[in-house]
Image (cartoon, rainbow, N blue to C red; front, side):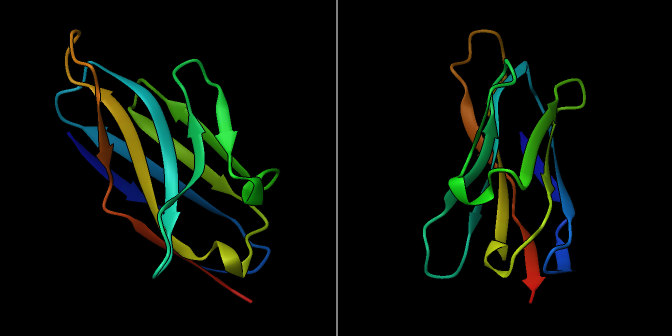
Length: 120
């Protein structure tokens, strides 16, 4: 299973970006999907997650500005980021908990990361 993210880039403060992440390979189903971010010297932190039933969870710092969604048919997860701030600058990683077959417990897979830079 491989994940590939896209949509990062440079944006001015107050601007918007949309991140996308697609999974490929042997996939029976995908449980949770999420986005994490990391800055140099800091631990990777959860930005947003979405469960199979659509339940979402957000870091307090992004509530009301970011929205996560998923398309199971396309094996994709999205992160709509609005009103971006310089402190949102980080490498963003997508994560998907994938069942490769019906009896699989599931395993976490990570994308390679996409850089988001917000200028002030």
